[in-house]
Structure formats: structure tokens, C-alpha cells
Length: 399
Image 1 (cartoon, helix red, strand yellow):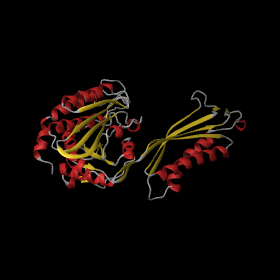
Image 2 (spheres, one colour; image 1 turned 45 degrees about the vertical axis):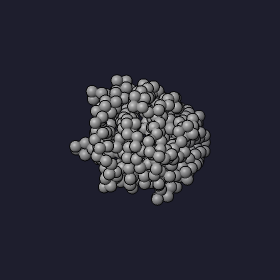
Image 3 (cartoon, one colour; image 1 turned 90 degrees about the vertical axis):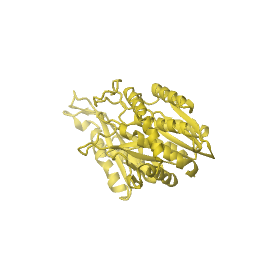
Image 4 (cartoon, one colour; image 1 turned 60 degrees about the horizontal axis):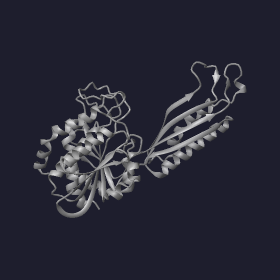
């Protein structure tokens, strides 16, 4: 178990970290716009004696710290900086001061916890090797992790393994969960335009080429991909999230185009390929059957997040050193959410872990990406302790 003196040292500056977290929460910034947040991070790192590198993928920050013990291993610890385009409804004293923007995913807390680890380790350098504290911009859909890697993140800051941590609402405080192998899903977007001629829906529908019929059949048909094309042993999700056609003020006119857009989630390259192929085939087949044309587009956004088995074992050991073996689920369920930390794990071995954000007294929880969500400040010392435990286990242990 992690030494109690370490826990006491972390607890001594918990209030400082809570203040940082709430300041970030009150001033949310969207992806690649996190100039204030990045400046705050850089200033704190410098204040504590950490070497700072700014402007990576526009607003990313990396802090580098070298231990006093012999060893040349290196480890990367990653947190995310950005907020969401969402209106906050918590009513908290430190609620967002920026209309239409909110830290609804806990990135403010992730940043505070990693800053806490940097503060402790900068003052207690009795570890081997080098730690790179990676503060990544634009996780929410814009691929900041991909951009950091493309800009040579791991060439400039070599690591033997890289680790991420995300809070999970509904998971009890003082617990962790993760699993080796595929852990979070690929997050892709697809769209199809069904193009016909349109026409008078009341007087002469027989003279029109109606794209609403193939679009409707397609929307029903996409679910057969899950039920009839993907093996029952695999998991995937296909959902329709947007449909647009015609004009509500002219219901007697058959539109000439119907636009359908959705998302797809999967865990393996083969299933990802299958989904793209079958969506395209179904769109073209339904369109052709009704004399229309389909224009399908499949956009691969975030790849599956795959935890390296050896790095996962290191993370389990580190987490157990903080909360005990019984409070670490090393076979946690897969998540159909996606995470662009996956790009870093494609480039280097590593692991993502979930830290419990807690449960309300009535057993419910406000989940991420909702207007009533708030990061639980009580878990900040737990997260900091995990990062510290990982560094004490990681640079020498990660292979």
C-alpha cells in the first residue's frame, strides 16, 4: 500500500487543488481554445519547478520531471483540458460563467488531479526515470490526442508507457475499474443522402421519385446489421441521431432529398469494416430499389481504446496500492463511449483506468455530458495518489 505519509502530504494541499478545479470549471473552454486553462496549467507547473513545454497541438501542455533515483525509464500521464458545448444547470457557486459551455465530463477534475501529482512528485523526487505530464486539448470530438501524436509528442517526450484516467459517475468513490484489451469503443459517424426528384405528394405522387421510402426502409434496416451480420459474441452499436427532409410548412410536397446521420461504435477493426460495408450496401440497395440514388459517407473518428495487458497489470497494482485489491475491478465492463486517448495507445503501450466519481444518496448519479453533472472533489486526493503510485511502480515496471 502507498505510504500514509504520501496520503497525508497529498491531503495537505487538497483545498488548493479543489480551488484550481473549480476555477477551471467556472471558465470552460472548448477544444483547441483552452488558452486560459493551458496558461493556468503551465503557471502551476513552473511554480512547482516542473519543466514546461507549451503550444503542442495548439493548446496542449507537457510538463517534464526527472527523478533522483538511478534509472532511465520514462512514463507518460495524460489528462484532458476541454469542456463541452452545453448549458450548465447545476446552480453551483462555481458554475460556468460562459454561456453554452460547461465542464460536463470532468476534464476540470482530471486536470486538477494530474496537477496534484506533479506538485507532489516535484517536491518528492525519490523515483527513478522521467515523468511526462501530458495535458491534452480537444478530447471532445476534435481529436486533440491524434494531433499531439501527429506533431511528434512521443518523439519529443519518449515514454515506455502512457496512462490515462477518467472519472465514472455511478462507480463508488474509492474504487477503480479497467480491463486489458479493448476497453472503449471506436466512435464513428456515418451519413446518407437519399436523392430522388420529389413532387406533389397529394396530386401526383406517382410522378415523383420519392426518397422518403428508401430512407425509411434503410433506417429500419440498419439494425439488421447488429442482429444478423455481427456475431453474437461481438458488441457494437449503430444509432440514427438525425433525420432531415422537406419543409414543415409544405407537408404536401415530397422532398427531393432525405438526409440521415448517425453514429457507430465497435471494438475491433474487422467489425468496424463490416459496419461501414453493410451501411453502404444497405443504403445503395434501398435507394436503387425505389429508383433513387444514395450518397453514403462513413467517417472514422476515434479508434477503439485498447489497454496493453502489461501496462494494465501495472495500473492495477498502482490502484490497489491506493484503495486495496478489493476496490479495483481488473475485469471491468467495456464502455461504448469513445476516447481519443486511444490515439496515444495506438502509438505507445499503456492503459486507461476509470476512477469512481460516486453515487447519490438515492442510488442515482448525474452522468457525464448532462447539464447537472459535476466532478466530485472528494476523489481528487484518490486520483492524485493513483498517479503517484503509478510513477513509483511505473517507470521501472513498465516494459
